[in-house]
Amino acid sequence: MESAGNVGCPNRNPNGFFSTLHWGRKDHDRYFMTGPGQFSGPDLSEGFHTYKLEWTEQFIKTYIDGNLVLNF
Image (cartoon, rainbow, N blue to C red):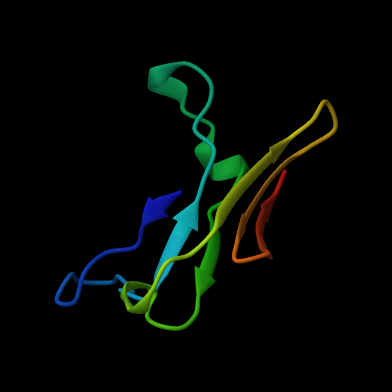
């Protein structure tokens, strides 16, 4: 999970975040093939949230508060 930014950051939503997988050699990062999964919802600073990573032989999934963000 990656924070989507703070108020005042250009091109960022302070109420959202990204879920991206970085893989491959450093000079050939394949992140663009796996996301980003994006979530925008209520102000994330207003309370606590549950983040979940589910990783099996078939898939990798990420969630926030039970909402699927990324399915790879």
